Image 1: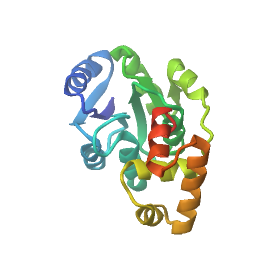
Image 2 (image 1 turned 90 degrees about the vertical axis):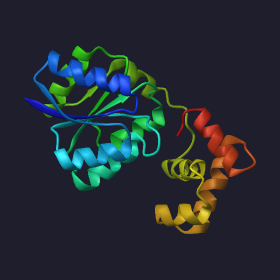
Image 3 (image 1 turned 180 degrees about the horizontal axis):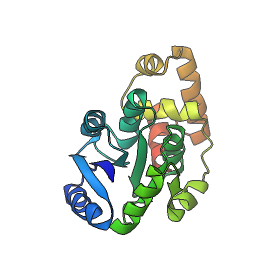
Image 4 (image 1 turned 90 degrees about the horizontal axis):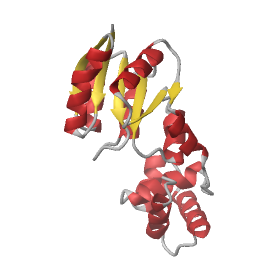
Length: 200
């Protein structure tokens, strides 16, 4: 028996998976979550064997939720469902220790088998997801990506410095490097350019 928490903001898909996964394998759905904050609460409360979480959710997205969960439950097994496997996002997820990636278009039977693989302590990345992750043309460093992501979220340079534990001057250096690499005039244009190119 494998216990899971299922987090996805698309109610129809979430409800369908909650109904179908137990029919496909020895799975018990302990709770459903409709957003990232809900996913953190449900995972910490129910302590599932595997958290099955959507990457893209409004508010607290999948990666932010995973980061919050990892800080309390560092060994939590996580399967991430993704529709758009952007290289930068996949790199961040792997750094956070996500053990599995499955396309949201996968059959329930496949998702069930991957849950079992992860529960055994192994890893799984769907071939179509890993193929997209290998196509990485991002010229930005990890830190440049971090400051652009925070910029896209509307934070000021001072806020970003506090958030990332950096000096404000260092943040400005990262932003000017990112603007140079994206050939843009402002940090907001740079963030928009990076997002459009799937670098964030």
